[in-house]
Each structure stands twice: as structure tokens, then as C-alpha cells.
Image 1 (tube, rainbow, N blue to C red):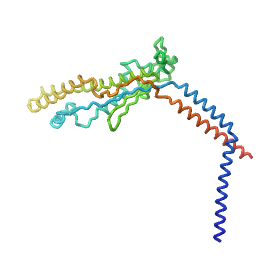
Image 2: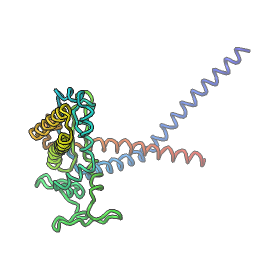
Image 3: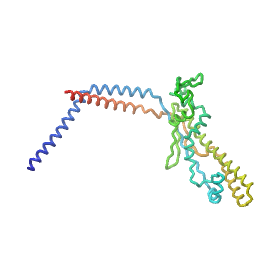
Image 4: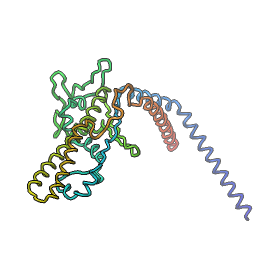
Length: 318
């Protein structure tokens, strides 16, 4: 009895293996029979991929490597322990509270407020919103004539409400965020600021402006805050008669005066440039070779699917 069961099991296993071999043979036979379709589909897809790759303009990436400027608390830690309550009341920052100026600077750099000041200071709007390429021979940014009239210097694009012909700061900031890249290495704390654009010269110039402006913005904010704190402390000195409180106020004023002096004497107040941006010689994208390889692969895959589907349909009809 057991021998019969064993024999039946062996026969079923052998039959299953034979069926798999037959299915594979039929599969390869169907693909071989439809090789012309696969070759044509692969060829057409490859031509389309090459055309797409060649039609895409070059994008250049300029970047700068920055280091956070370390601020040594020194005597500030003692002041923070001794006059922490008075400092917080006056809005005075004495450090030591875990406040990360680097993170704040990165977020300010990405903010709409910073961009609004940035676009109001520098002529970047046309190159940002209307460019579609770069003439390397004449070093000129190519402008889409359906968006901006260069001769008349007027926006002529057709925009749906609530958009207008002239891009708003909010719309421009959204596009600028796609070109801007700000990253910080967790181990070294170094910051990389990068801009991608059709023109390598524009990309380099924007990075330089960004580094300069973020330092100036944070420095001005610190100076203004310190000056407001000094004004408040001077007013409090006039209102109190306690010598100990007056002494504490004077020490806080001294710390804020030092902050203003150091800020005004430091052009690179927040970020120190370790490796400034240069005009990139090589494009960052598109990866034309990769696009062509993907087109070749997808074309072959599509051709095989067409052949198998056609073969399966014919079998069903039979």
C-alpha cells in the first residue's frame, strides 16, 4: 500500500516538473516568435528616451560649505546663573539655554520672510520664474517669451486667478524652494547651501548672496534685540534705588554692548565660509545616459508584455 502511494507521489512530482518545463518552453517560444515586435518596441522607446534626454536643458549646481560660528559664553554663563530672572524679564539672551542659532539660521534661510527681502533686494525674479535655458556662448539666461517680454520688461504670461501675470512672492518662494538645498552634517555640523539653475553663473551668484544675507539678517536681528534690551535696562536703572539691582542691570548692559560690538565687527556672524561657491563646469542633471538606459529597458519590457498578452489572447480564442 505504501509503495503505491509513493509511486503516485513520484509520478505527480515528475508531471509537475514536466509541466513547468513545458510552460517555460512555451514562454520562450512566444517571446521568440514575437521578437520583431519586441525589437521594434525597444527601438521606438529608445528613440523617444534619447529625444527626451536631448531636449532637457542642463541644470548646474553651485554650493558653499559653511561652518557655524561658535560663540563662547565665557562670563555669560556666570551672568546667566546670577541674573537669569532679570535677563529673561528684559528679553536679554545670555546663552547657555540650549538655543541653537544654527538651526534658527537655517529655518530663517528657508522662510518666506527672508525670501521676500531677498527678492526685493536682488533682481532674481525673471531668472527664477521665466528662464528655460542658458546660452553658454554668450553667457545669457534664456527667457521664455510667453512668460516675460524682455524688451518691454513686462510679465505677459497667462495665469489663472488668483495668480496674476506677475508672479507673487508666495508663488516665487515655492519655486525657489525647489532650487534651494540646505543640509547640515550631523557629525561635523557643517552646513551646505546649494542652488540649482540653468546658468552656472546665476547659481553661484545666488549662493553668494544667500550666505551674505543670512549672516546680515541674523546679525541685524541680534543687534536690534540687544539694543532694545539696553534701552529697557537703562529705563529700569532710573526707576530703582537698590544698588545691587543697579549693579546687575549694568552688567547686563555690558553683556549686550559686547554683543553689539562683536556683531558689528563680524561680517560672518552666524556662518563662516569654509569653501565658497564656484561656477560649476559640469552639469548636475539630467542624467542622459541613465534616461537612455531606462528607455531601452522599459521598451524591451513593454514589447515582451505586448507579445505575451497577444499570445495569451490567441490561446483563449483557440
